[in-house]
Image 1 (cartoon, rainbow, N blue to C red):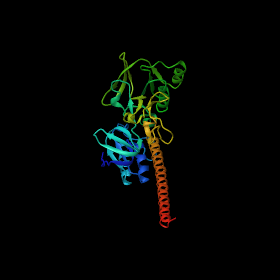
Image 2: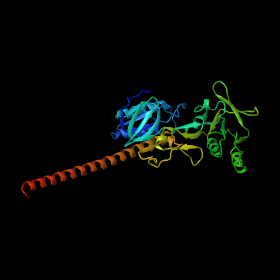
Image 3: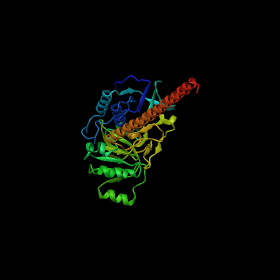
Image 4: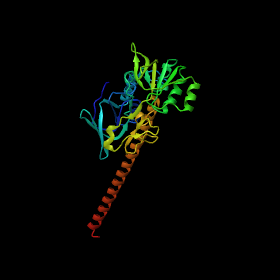
Length: 340
């Protein structure tokens, strides 16, 4: 990744250079804000061949999309710097953000778009195929695996919903309970009605031949032929560097990960800090993340505008008061000079 020079002070530092961060920075740069995106270069969707469900850019390779976004930001004077943020603290009316290589930068506002980490079951072969033929989202990858032999690996009750969605894409879907309880009679009836076979027992590994998945191996040695594995990850926001600001992740109400809470504009509970994208919306696709980044960028600019007007009014009042005091002093001195 081409990297710009990092200055000492900015209006806004954007932590993370994915769709949310880049679109937030774009809005800020177009508003003539000094803004820098600091990106560790570890996009969540790096293993994927293309971004899907994004209007007018469907199928675009993730790397190409990010390169285009960086170029757009630079066109308006914004900067994109390669680096890993390790800490952030409040320093008067600024934030000081530190990087792993020892560099530091100050900013009036902070936009957090560092995304999330996908935690997968410890099953041999699963992590290595992630983003290829091991996937989680039918909207991100479903069309590409349509009509294939799909395994859905249970991670809890929400996996039943995942089964139902993938059944829309293929007639050949098998549900593996793995280390979770068997479906309730009602759920089993619904799955059977749609031709979904339920296979109980712990999954011991993924069978791979010629760089492709060929089956699911159970602990008893049984192998069930499959081509694709769908499994829900536990999604955990990348936010450890925010502890110095007292901003911590919270368990998601649905129970599938941890996120940073914020309001609809991206404003967090810490004044001056906004969040957008997967760091706060665990299920957001690229388009939704980009839109949230744009909203947060606009809100940050509006917040800075209000602050600047407040400062200008206070300064003007101070100047008026000083001028009035000087005029009064001059009048008093003049009166004394005339013996009054």
